[in-house]
Length: 258
Image 1 (cartoon, one colour):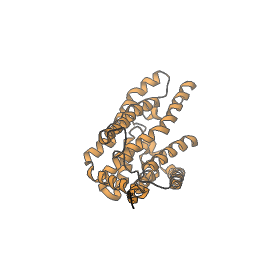
Image 2 (cartoon, one colour):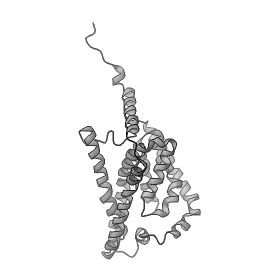
Image 3 (cartoon, rainbow, N blue to C red):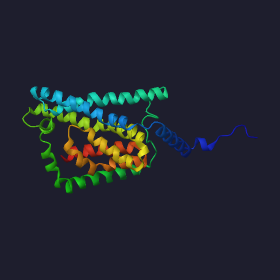
Image 4 (tube, rainbow, N blue to C red):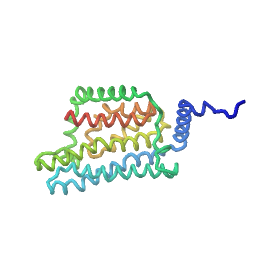
C-alpha cells in the first residue's frame, strides 16, 4: 500500500532548471525597458563616475597622487550604491536579500564550459589586441588628447613611489572586484530587459557598455572589436556567471601583461 508519493518531475534538477528558465523568461518579457530608460540606466552611471573623476583628479594630483585616483573614487561612489540598489530591488521582490528575479541569466552550465569559453574569449581578445588594434589605436588616442581628463587618466609618472604603489594596489582591487558589479548590472539586470531586440541585444548592450566608459572614449573602437564575446556568450548561454568570469579574467590578465 502506498503511504505517500513523490513527484519526481518536481524534485529533479532538470525540472528545477526548467522552472527557473521559465520564470526568467517571464520576467524578461514583462519588464522590458523603454529606449529612454535603457539609455539613462546605461549611461548615467558613467556620467557620474566621469564627473567625480574630473572634479577630484586635480585635487588628488595636488596631494601628490596620480589623477586616476579620482576614477577609483568615482567608481566606488557609483558602483557600490548600484549593487545596493539591485539588492534593494531583490528584497522588495523576494522579501529577503536576494538577486533572484532581478539579475537574470542564471541558466546552469557544465563547469568545463566556463573554462573553455573564458580561455577562448581571452585568447581572442589578446590576439586581436596585438594584431588588429595596433593598426589604429594610436591614431584614435591622438584624436582624443583634448578630452577632459586624458592626461590624468594615463599619467602615473612624476609622483612619489609610495603614492603610486597605493594607487596601483587600489586599481588592482577595482579591476578585480568592480567587474562583478558591472556584469551583475549591465549583463544580468539591463541586458535581459532589452531582449525584445532579439539577436541585436548583445550588440546594443556592448555598445552602450562601451559608451558608459566616458573617461576613456578612445577605447570604444577597441572594445567593439575585442569584447563582443563578453556580451554575446552570456547572452547566448543565458549565464551571468560566465560574463563575470570572462570580465575578471580579461582585467586581471591585462594588468599582469602590462
